Length: 264
Image 1: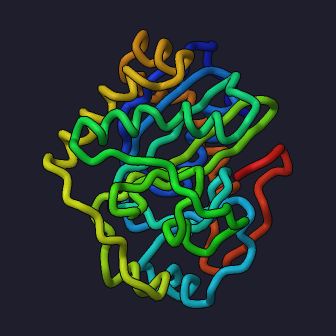
Image 2: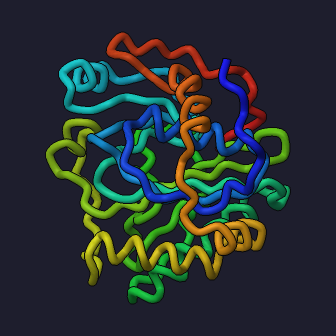
């Protein structure tokens, strides 16, 4: 069994493009370290991630996974299904967040509001009631989500609380694919205002905003450890977690280890 690498601050992790189960296992491993961390990442292929509470899948999702159109994975965080591969995903690990979920969301999303305000597209929190295990995360905008001036959802977020620590996931939607969106969710993809910069420039803008407006423990950790690379020993430990988040074509929906306290 691989031994744990020496303790270190988790800090700001390099943007990576990996498969879905690797991305989820990376976030799960970072949460276990008990240290503040922040990362932006992309996906190798179109991937549908299911919230921790989702247990019933439409049959056509399974068919799309079987045919290789999408990868199907489970998130440790809650919320509804999210289509990845057409935007940027963030994950933050917050060891001592505020006790209230709403306040934790408010503080954890300030960097996103700062970044989009600087782009001339201010975002506000949604107002729809939360729906446990909603089929499509982007079908409604709750107090966990950020919407633009026209009411269109730009960022969907979800949380996992474990032993007093917070993992918050979020998807920053950029270019949702109309046909695949319709095939999955049976409706039109969100109509979002184009951003006045490239995806690479947007990533730089988001990172700069994160270093200004993340909650203090995360901001300090990230500013002192710029772009920590993954080490071989860490990746070996992360690889041992992959099965927790993999949903094969047969859609085995057994939950990951029963160590989750609460998700939203």
